[in-house]
Image (cartoon, rainbow, N blue to C red; front, side):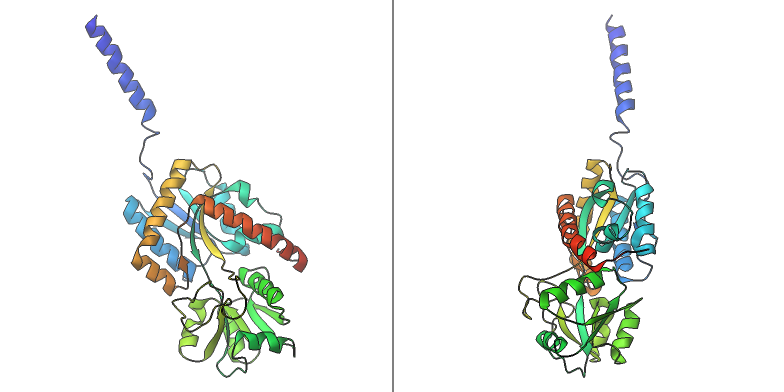
Length: 320
């Protein structure tokens, strides 16, 4: 009798072990890929590759960066949306793909279709002028725009740069013609060549020209002075209290990704972003590292969408 009970007990334990083992399998136990809309070589791509390397070391699994540029981020986002919701396919998403594009095209619902994991970084923008420009301060820019037609240049219509410009111009009462271009290099060349009065750019792109003395920073959009450009005052210092528009970069997954895997990935990312070496690398790329909870990213997305929707409607932006 005792022998029979022992056999039944042992068999039950084996059955339970077989049933429960997949649920308790270590995650990740195979390669993870992170899709990004930015092309190789840019600041977001470089930052992501450093982060991926650190996560790979931590997880003991390859973390593969997959560049899917084009269509205002829709190519990479579509790939992410089609992926299984298992934590093995993630997306490094820039703010404009979530807070601008869905209002300008018939595409997807970022609130229902994507799972926030973490705010990774904020990216301040900087207003720059030629070194010999008569515009010495932000207030000079504001006042001069009311006297004559000025040209302000930055990236294409519907990008974060364009929307930050439109927001700022409305708040500051600036009147100027916006000149979109396909790249930072084109914009800065047009500025140096005299075709533009002011340019709105990323610190990583303009830093070299600022340090060489060919350009001068009027104001930066970070809430405090950015360590990479310590001589450039903030918009708040320049007469716009409480105003610091900084588009974000966030890590997301397909909706339905298990909560325990979301939490594990978030904690891993936060640990990497706390490392001083990682922070220094990101600041060198013009980024302010964060590492937030999924809830904070979700709240940020909702807040930005509430702010962007009426602005995009007012501007009549439609993307192809």
